[in-house]
Amino acid sequence: MNIVTVVGARPQFIKAAPLSRALRAQHREILIHTGQHYDDSMSAVFFRELGLPEPDVHLAAGGGSHAEQTAQMLTGIETVLLAEKPDWLLIYGDTNSTLAGALAAAKLHVPIAHVEAGLRSFNRRMPEEVNRVVADHLATLLLCPSDTAVANLTREGLSNGVHVVGDIMADALHEAAARADASTVLAQHGLQARGYLLATVHRAENTDDPARLAAILAAFRDLDRLILFPIHPRTRKALAAAGLELPPRVRACEPLGHLDLVRALRDADLVLTDSGGLQKEACWLGVPCVTLRDETEWIETVQTGWNQLVGADRTRITSAVGQAKRPSLPADLYGGDGGAAHRIVALLG
Image (cartoon, rainbow, N blue to C red; front, side):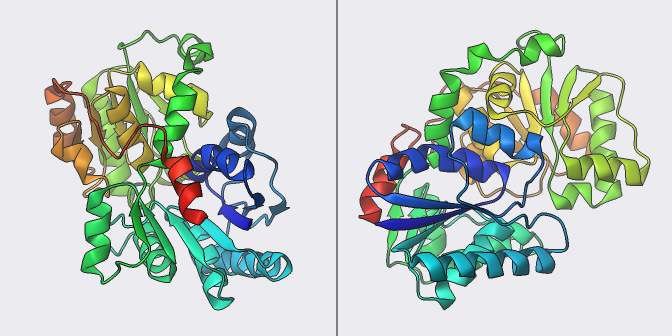
């Protein structure tokens, strides 16, 4: 079979790595990189570390408004689909790249396989929520990480082609964790295991709202703990635009490659994040998580006690960190056995 895969953002590179290897053992894959994340620290380093093949097509569609970015991707993906006439279009998650891939394929009647189908925050103000809902309703094969995702789809009248395959990020984490000891990220930043917190902030709801961003930084200051803070390009621009300065005990750095991030997460005392992926990875690695959002798609992480939702409230953030503890039982979530890639390939045929 011929399968066109669309990726464009850092989390998608991580998810695509194990699945691309499994696909290419049996089928032909044409990899499109939309360029949604395009600088070295957000893109090229992940291809190198994860062993992803070089993209067959690079659309260079980074930057611009949501409409401009999606339109450029849509045009480029359509051109590839017309030329390749694939058996499947494979998309991941909830980015503009996901949406553009789904729209282009649906209009050309190319079957769509959506990895991470069925996730819902129930907040339509999030661009990611709009993207994932549209992608699910256009998809032929809905590849879900959990029974909760299946239930979300059922409520929306989607039942055909729905399968629980587990979480593809667990496959990637298994591979990275085995190599994480080679990372020197702690030594580079003068950190000791369990002697620091890890923080990431990148979602528009936090970066595009100066009041929320200021409250998060105020909480970091109140905590008076060493915090390793890899800064997303969007966040760096937002900090500068709002005239906000980092607290003294926050050690800022450029975005980390996947191996460095897994090592930094594994050895942290706690993670503060608005990333969906880090919520799950923290649970799998046994690290308590405080999520800087008002809702989460990964509700099971909260139900098992590994994750606390605090939004951007200064008091709730500091309180949650103070009360955080490692539950007695590990988080056995989302079929994290490392076998999702092979289950997906089997369903694609």
